[in-house]
Amino acid sequence: MRHLLLFPCLLSIATTHVHGQCNGSISLGPDVVLCEGQTTLLTPGPGYISYVWNDGFTGAVRNEGTAGVYSCTVQELAVGVNLVVNGDFSAGATGFTSGYVPGTGGTWGLLSLEGQYAVASNGTATHNNFPPCTDHTGGGNMMVVNGAAVPGVSIWCQSITVTPNTNYAFSAWLSTMVTSNPAVLQFTINGQVLGGTFTAPSTSCTWDQFSELWNSGTNTTAEICITNQNTQVSGNDFAIDDITFTQFCNYTDTVEVFVNAYPEPDLGPDQVFCGPGTVVLDATTPTVDTYIWNNGLANGPQLTVTTSGTYWVNVFTGACFGRDSVTVTFLPQPTLDLGGDQSACSGDSVTIFPFPQDADYLWHDGSTNNSYTTSTSEVVWLQISQGPCTASDTVLVSIDPCTAVVEMPNVFSPNGDGHNDQFQAILLDGVSGVQLNIFNRWGQLVYESKGPQFAWDGRTGAGMNVSDGVYFWTLTYNGPKGNGEQYGTVTLLR
Image (cartoon, rainbow, N blue to C red; front, side):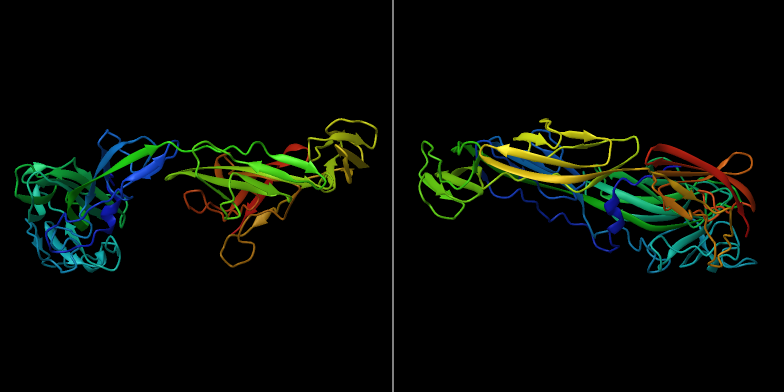
């Protein structure tokens, strides 16, 4: 069975009765002037099937900082133009030919006999034994078929006018009415096989897509036919919908990138001062004719600042500009923050890393390290010095016993009455990284879940109800003192 979905955009193609036209265009934008070191994004836009640039690059977007001429050719489907007439069967059983005959009725409904078809919105409406399947998109029509015992008979054919030497995309959707002996379809254009055989889904009312590319070559007409290679009388019942045949279009555009040198101002490293002061920032740069600072004024190459902040300057030489920034900090005194009070479990320790790091330290115990580690409850005090400025802070460290609490029920009744319908934790305290596994009495895994919000409803991962009885569970988790595991049993009563 082939499950091809080569072109997701096929799903949005509307069915129309007009010939596709390639009258669109793309734009790479106007020519671009860059300063040396800058880059620009070149793209004709998203959503095209393929992109081929003049240097062989095949991406949709490229980031370029090199001077040169760039052109891109894109390919897209003629969106909104389906060359198949009545491909969604909205107009009923018209617009196509068939080696099968319209349903003549019988014991089980309209399609009681093999080798017959009907256009309907519901499978049951054509055969009493068919399920109530609906069309591919819901709410419309589909072609329902009772497969014949003769292979190669055309189920659906249509002749379409095409343009020579043009790429086209063909797509059709197939569903099964009766699961025994699913249909095996073959698609041809002008008598030539298109792709491999396509087997209907093994479950009823499920839609699978067949899609292939076709180049018209010298042809001006495409005779598209769908045949069934299955010769089984039992089963071999299916539906076809949303048949599309869409032209590809190619569009090209060109853009040129120019790269010029740009000025590079240098305001120096960030500066920090303790107490009030004055700083003169100097952005003098050769060849620059204009300086614009972050205050929006062209004040020349120098700026005097007396307050903390980040200052930047744009310098211009013709059309190119450069920028630099510097952070100036005036500190009346250093700022120290040891963070909030901290706690840990018995046997563990707490390490305090104060901020800032560029300071001299004096801890309450006389140590001068840049961090402090303790495994007992105590009040930690630190004083830092930055030049003439000092600051201090304290933090409370609490060492406590830590435990993990897990409480699970021993019985639940997933009968849908809204009471005790799911097996879930009564209490999970102090745990994380929870993994629940549930096994039947033969040791087979029937359910697994990660995370504390598990809720087993008595079904397997495939959605099947398990039988009443006793099930064994294991719960692994990360506790305050490492990994832990608990296990037990639960009785399932419906």
